Length: 325
Image (cartoon, rainbow, N blue to C red; front, side):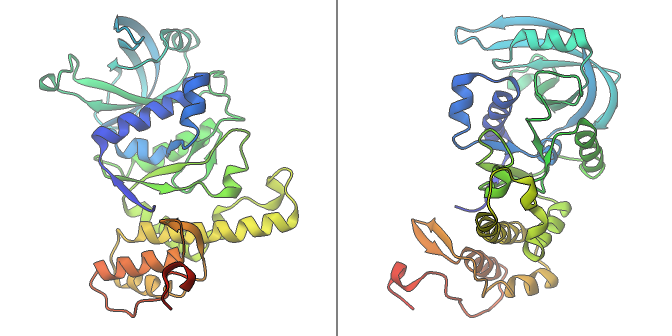
């Protein structure tokens, strides 16, 4: 378990499919994907895009369909705002996959505002257009395809964002500091109390970008994990004792995630912070080859070793797991 650093090309095709499953919905594929869904944070989508544009569908044209029902289509976007990339007033995108054509038609007819994330293609890689469609988020309060009161997009702070205005605020703020593409990694698994906020399965992984903003988030995960969690009154049908037990476990999960993130950012301050995690009490059940592990200690010690910092090895496994004290 733990952190997975991810390069764009192969992984995002998988992530995009899961995102589009959530966006457009197919009963069979949704059920399959939600067994362990991958949530692309808003910031991750921006970080791995060459261009991010707010706009509406001007026209769409289907190019061809294969036997599996996958379509290769061209859509033209009227751009109202360029958040990242070369400024455009109109943008032609090449789209792939099984996105229903009627969605584009509906968006065109309703002039639905959408955030478009695009990658620069090239002819030598088989793209007949210099711009390749990547993914999109609807950010229109009237849009019915993604009912925002129920469905949520996630920020890199595990915040469930339902407001179109807040989606745009996060996107605009992060895009200002995201000039190029960057690495992603995934944090597993969605903390229990956050998962309980949703009527659907919101478990699984959250994909976040590696960058200066993540270091700040990581330090807060370690030092103030409770600040990421919903209040008891926000969780329907939970009693006080169960809430306290879930909160204690989730705080440990956030400290472990914070250590995973902080391992990307070596500094004197972060060395000192990780040293202080070597006696962390969080025992994560069945975390390492079905063993009970002090996961925060384990990952903090591993990061310090990689950084060349000499510290005594802490107790990581329970004696009955490993046969050692």
